[in-house]
Length: 357
Ligand SMILES: [Zn+2]
Image (cartoon, rainbow, N blue to C red; front, side, top):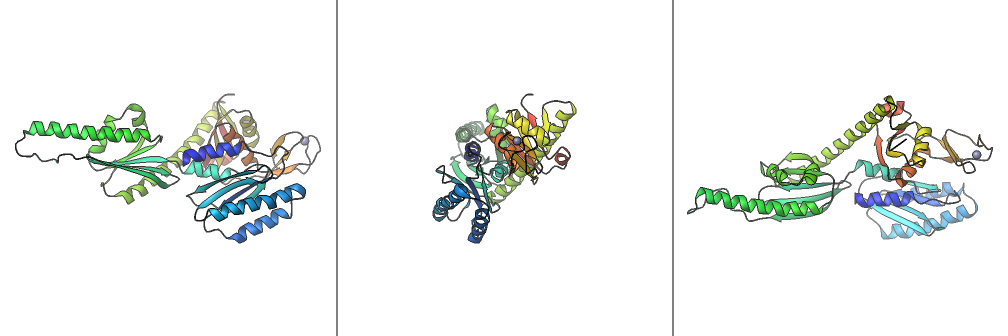
């Protein structure tokens, strides 16, 4: 699903109200949500909106409630605007915080964070005559495939020479591994965790072509019937890798800044860079939510609070600057890394490695 999630986020990042009016509703709900939460948030938003924005919210909530009636039993994120006949949703296996936001575009931050934190991977459990391939997405097993072969057992049978026996056995194992290799190739995942008892998994790795071998990120020694433990361990390994990656991103950012290289940092610089399509990797402090303002007249977005635009004097609207940066990043195919590395706060809470400058 994470491949779909990437496409889903990209698609949503391209959607916004051309009049910059608050006509998009983003609703994130855990499966055990309380309808009172929705009522309370809708009431609060209705007390602020006027005219066609108010009518649009009522109509949009009707569209949303029909989705909720059909989809019970999953965490879900829904994005809708009745005015634009827009309704998209995605079930999510990971727990999310309930959230209802009315804005001029879909609110993507929670989705982007899920995508960053729950990398998909392929898990292969293998010995010399049995293999099981798991596709794990958003922390859940989405699909499995079992393969097995009749391989003569380790002990020599009467009448055969040891050499002939060994040759046949090796040939049979090789044929089985080739079959597994083909099945593995069909999974396009960039991360493979290889697991199993003894030497078989290592012999299998040796047989892989370079592109698949490079995707093997961990090798785990484990009994062939220890599936539950293996899944737990794999998720731990993948989330450890994710943490490592976010620290590495901050380290790289610091290095680029030191040599005045391909980096931008702080809200203002990062926003400019991302609007120019310069951002390769966007780095965001996990829980940073500064207030910001936007002037539709000047097309300016900045951090801080200004009721009137300091450039043209017209009325501004409040805006989530990090969300703005994130939407530009998704639109321009930048990677996004959320981090709780303390150093990012010193660098202005948000930064980017650039493609060019
Ligand atoms: Zn202005």
